[in-house]
Every structure is written in C-alpha cells, then in structure tokens.
Length: 476
Ligand code: IMP
Image (cartoon, rainbow, N blue to C red):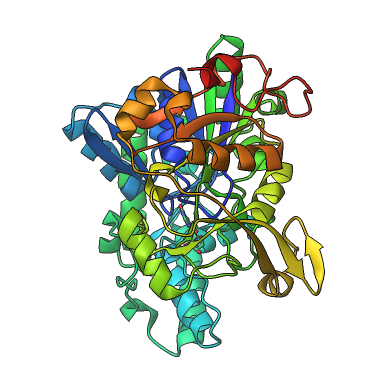
C-alpha cells in the first residue's frame, strides 16, 4: 500500500514524525512540493534530526525522492546530506530532472518583495528561502531545472540574459545598485548559496557547474514519475510527503498568506508525475496538531491573545523550525479541518502533540464560526470574510501529565479519558478514523492504531462499519 501524509493546518503539525513512524515500512518517501522552507524534526534513537529538504523517511533508510514539484536549493540539500553522512546515515536520495533549482537571486528577490510589501503592511512573513520567486520563474518559463545542470547546463548567454533581466528589475524597484543588494540575513536561515553574489552571472554559472558535477557524480537525477510507477509495480510501498500544511496551499489556503505550491493531495500527483491511481488508491493521512500554530502572517480566528500565547509557547516550546520565529498560537479549529478533509479526502487522522496540552487550563475547541450572523461549518474563501469569522467554542476537559512513554507502549487505552474524548470528538466531527496519536516527539512516542501501509483501504471514508478506533486497540 501507499500513503500520502498531509498537514491539515498551517504547517508544523508534526508531519515529519508521522512520516517517520510509517517510513519504517516504506521503501520510498517522496516529497512533491516546496523547498528549504519546510522544517521537519525527526527524533530517532535519542537523536534529533532537523531536515528542511530531505524527506523525513531517509533517516529510517527509505529511498528519499524530491519530485518535480519541488524547488530545490542544492546548497541546502548537499549540506543536509553531508551532515547526515557525518552522523553515520548515508541516505539514497534522488531528485527529479524536472525539479526547479533555487538560485541565489531568488533568495534576494524574496527579501526585496517582502520589504516592498512591508510598505503597505502586507508582508507574507516568508521563510526567506526564495520559494515564491523560484516558483514565479517556473511559471514564467525561465527557471533552471536539475536535469539541465547535469546535461549541458544553461548556456552562458542564457544565464547572462536571465541575471541581467533580474538585475535591471531590481535596480528599477530599489533605485539602487543590484550588485550591492545582499540577502537579508535577519530572518533567513543560512545557505551555502549565500556566498554566491545574487546578481553575478559568472559566480552563479560556477555554482551551477559545481552543483551539476555533484548531482552527476552521485547519480541523483531521476524521472520521478517513471521511477515511482515502476517501483509501485515491483511491490514497493511509497509514502508521499507534503512539505507544508493545507491552509498555506497557494490554491486552498489563506491567500495571499500562503506558500507558492500545493501541499494538498493534488500536488502529490502533479508534483511527481506518478500514475495518479497510485496516489488516489492509497491512504491519505491528515496530520492534525492538537492546537493551532502559525509562523507567518494571515488570518487565524482562534488565535490566543499574546499573554496567553506566551504561556502556551512556554509549555510547548513553539518556535519555527526553519526561522526560529515564535509561533502564533490558537485553539484547534474544526472549520479549518473540515476544509482540509474535503480538499484532501483524508482516510485517516494522525493527531499530534497530545502530551503538550496536558494540564492546560481552559482548553477549548472551535466547532464552527459565526460569520455575519450566520453559523458556518467551514472556512470562507476570502481573507476578508475569514477575518470576520468569530469562533464558536466548546469547552473541553483537560488531562493530567502522564508517563507518556509508558502510555505509548501500552496503547490507545492508556491515553487519559479526557484526551480520548478530545481526540474522538475531532475524529467524529470529521468522520475520519484515527490512525495515530502523538504523545511525544520520538517515533516511540506515537500510538499507532492502524498502519496505512499494512492495510488495504479498509479505513475509507463513507464506510458505515468503520470504527473511530479499531476495536482491539480501544480494549487495551
Ligand atoms: P515561503 O514558503 O517561504 O514563501 O513562506 C510563505 C508562507 O508559508 C509564510 O507564512 C511561511 O511562514 C509559511 N511557511 C512556509 N513553509 C512553512 C513550513 O514548513 N511550516 C510552517 N509555515 C511555513
């Protein structure tokens, strides 16, 4: 069986940990969109791995693939590979020939665009990794793809023309000298590409040549669609990993406060080129964090006031993995989850961070919104309407802290009653069964109720006989 793992909220739901749990049974883990903007924390055998580009499953020995829907900063990819190798893990990583490459000027343009938006108070709060500008160039038919680097590469005239157009554009916008524009380091994580001057065509050409040589030497470039389809027919199991959450999807999220790609299910098809029936015939696991957090700007109806958010941050240590920014915090929002369930067709839910809410005073669950005097069950399409939504809450009983490792070992029945009520309220509202519950950061701290890779699609939505919790587990 195959499974797609998708964030149901605004990113940072704990997808990396859930992929890691299932990756032990997967042969291949493929990322189908996004780039070094993602931050996945994988805890394994007492070690913690922070991954931005590599699919989380590589830590467990699955083949890791970056599909054609990704935009790849190769300096970050190579640095991650080297860091893992130093720690004794030698992952088998492939990158699609059609995947676009993030170039040094994309990061500079990201920073310039955010600064310009700031003048009208409209910054997105991007991670500063050049994601939007790289996808703009893809759609604008002027991108550079991984396959180009191992073939002839963009020829000098082509690169000169590209860089020159960017430089003139930037000079016009900034009234300045593009050569002196540095990538704003204040909110941007480090990248070896920082050392390449963003608008120097010769320096970029040299960087591209080095990247191409390494891709070639390590034989990393593949045709993902052909590779995955053949692997599927050979009986291999594949996990498709969405890099961001549903509500920062460029089509289905809180536009314009979104990333520039599709983490939702359709992205797994267009972002890999695999036979669509392979994605559609597998499970779709929605990862839900038991509260809400957001690192960028944009509407968030259940957001907690700053003082209360500080308390939660203190409790859960909520800071962005990539940017280190404090996360905004809110109550779990069912209207958002209903939207995510429809857009992705979830067949199972993995609810994470249940341990972090223990003993949390005054726990609330947003069950619907009031919008212009009407009760609405799911999110409206426009930002202005969403900003007018008033959450309707249900108070929930909290639970005491536990020896969560022991809980994880014993199984679902050891989870405190109040926490089970919380989990089952969510699963019932969405009519999707629970397949996993995260009660701590490590793989061992995940209670697995059903492994999608072991099962045929018995967890399908719409099945009348489907239990919210498999009977044998709930009895333990
Ligand atoms: P970008 O993807 O860097 O262009 O950022 C666009 C928006 O998506 C910003 O609000 C970011 O904070 C958000 N974002 C991008 N990647 C992630 C992620 O992996 N987790 C959470 N938020 C993200």
